[in-house]
Amino acid sequence: MDIEEASLTRSADTRALAYLETVATRRVFPDNDALAALSAFDEPLSERGVDAEETLALLDDVGSPATVATNGPRYFGFVVGAALPVAAAAERLMLAWDNGAPLHLTSPVCAKVEEVAAGWLLDILDLPRKSAVGFGTSASASSLVCLTAARQKLLMNAGWDADKHGLFGAPEIKVVVSEKVHITVLKALRILGFGTERIIFAAVNDHGAIDLARLPPLDARTIVCLQAGEVNTGEFDPVEAIALKAQEVGAWVHVDGAFGLWARASEKLRHHTVGMELADSWAVDGHKWLNTPYDCAMAICKDPATLAAAMNSDAVYANGANSAQKNLTIEFSRRARGVPVWAALRTLGRQGVAAMIERHCTQASALAQALSDNGFDVVNRVVLNQVLVRGRDDAETRAIQAYVHDSGDVWFGTTMWGGRAAFRLSVSSWRTTDSDISLLSNVICKARDAYNPSAQ
Ligand SMILES: Cc1ncc(COP(=O)(O)O)c(C=O)c1O
Image (cartoon, rainbow, N blue to C red; front, side):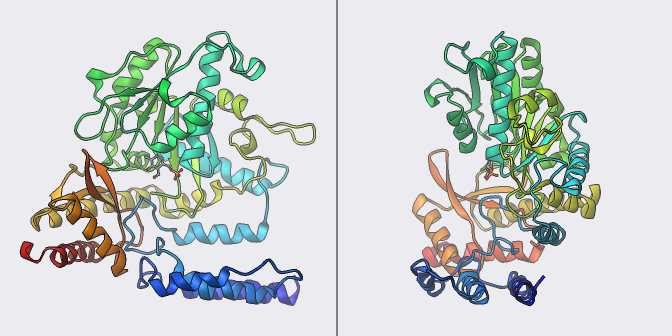
């Protein structure tokens, strides 16, 4: 390594450390001055290049103040989680390795560590131990991967080899999803060519979980997509009953468990996930509730050969086993996203993961209670880490969110539930303490009082 590379790497580390030292106290959403300063990036592409230290300085000096402090304790939007120090540290080390990790040949260590991480993941989530685990970029991509495998398998069962013959003239595969399906599952289905108007929507109950009594019929040409953790309420579809029905007829059950599947890691919460192991495939994020850095997610498929056939990218110059990550994910060249998962699981251990998940759920319940005591309408029954709250009307709800956004003290977003605006509070950062939760409820009350002084 030359002196310049050493100095630049040290600068980046120093700047990263300085950022982390302030992440718990900095504004959560940047102020207008920081946003306006972003225009410093509006420069023409340099002909001869610019000094590397100067490039890094611009990114940090102008860029860092315009970040959203999602890696801090007071960001409650979008179920994002922060980055556990060990998972982020493992990523830093991997940056130095710069190993692409499609298969053993390109990085023996990544292949080994991802294999171990896959086993631990199946263990902690208590899913069938022979399942294949593809470490990909997101729950969106993981659902895409699993649904591709699902379609290939059901078509194969119907005597149609889609790999060879494509989809024109293939038997029709039906897809059933919840009325509250996450938009990214619909996106995956659209990419796969299912056509949004052909998708069958299963009715949900007041909590946002599929109403079993109104489940559309399933057959051997049906993929049914369930949720572990509805994005607003955190609710779970009745997986066991639906998976048993699906098994009887040969339908495929896919579970979008982007954050909620982690409930399975806790003895106290796993009752929400009874029968989860009966499904055929699952998508779950690392970068949400496990608090790994972006972008990190897992596509898990009970039938390893089906996933490996659907994702195979063997080439004359690069053959891999069915377990090679390039044969389980969309990417060929890829970062070893299983390594931060391994680091997080190894460092937290089974109890540490459960404790983090349970703490967030306890904090969410305490938050709901505090807001309800202060006259807010808590809309959901808070089964997990999500709290859905309304002001007296949509205008008040939106005004509270806008006040909070501007304050920089905390951040959360709004959603629609039952045709009305609500704010969605998600507790998912390992850094969040009970006093951050008190601060959040105080800021919300202050925002309501500023909008509507007579409510005090
Ligand atoms: C329930 C659910 N499914 C899927 C996704 C998409 O996850 P990702 O952003 O990792 O693609 C999310 C993200 O918010 C989610 O909450």
